[in-house]
Image 1 (cartoon, chains in turn green, cyan, blue, yellow):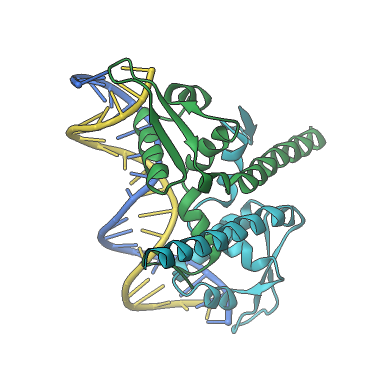
Image 2: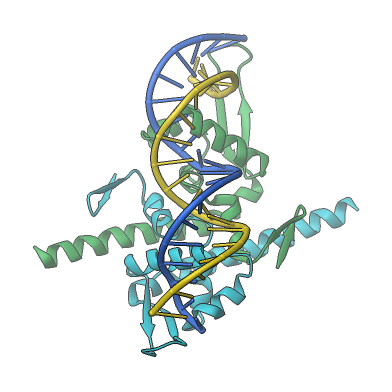
Length: 117
Length: 117
DNA sequence: CGGTATCCTGTCCGATACTG
DNA sequence: CAGTATCGGACAGGATACCG
């Protein structure tokens, strides 16, 4: 049993999923590995996410101190950049493992298809 | 864009989350790394999961060919064992990374607390 | 022992429209 | 450009009771 901020987690794995679980967080973070990204850049990488959801997920990641939000202009059009924090960067090895396995799974399913057809 | 079984994924990370996302799947798999486990053993490891949810998650993992379900008795009391499949074993490095980061995050939050108090 | 059945709640997340 | 506001549907997951 682990405790962070008075919240109880039955397993160290639960802790991680609390931070990067959900449909989009890991994907957002994956794209931030290679460097800072603007809001619209992220949207282009994830064409099927809605503005609202992207906005919410970014806000949560910011609250968890995983990413940093930096505003470069005072008046519209705004220019906002998102970056991994130092804490967020500790996630990189894991994010790469997650991505690597995803690719492996896709490859495998292709092979299966080829064998069947 | 990746496609498995006619389902579209915008990113390789999405593929992985499709398999191990959710509140419990990664936790179940983490406990299966060290070897086969019975239904009630898993429940003891995760005291806060409900029977229904554990049952559902196990069934989904079985459908995804990540775990294997083996029944050893014909009449009650039943004896059922869950094991990682060969495909499921490919997840191990990632699962260990996820667990490792969870522990790291807990340690870090402790440090922060000590610094504050 | 290893589950189902039933019911119910919360939350995630999408669609759409609007704004400084 | 980078969001917010509002509404609503789907589904994950909890509580409890029961079964082969």
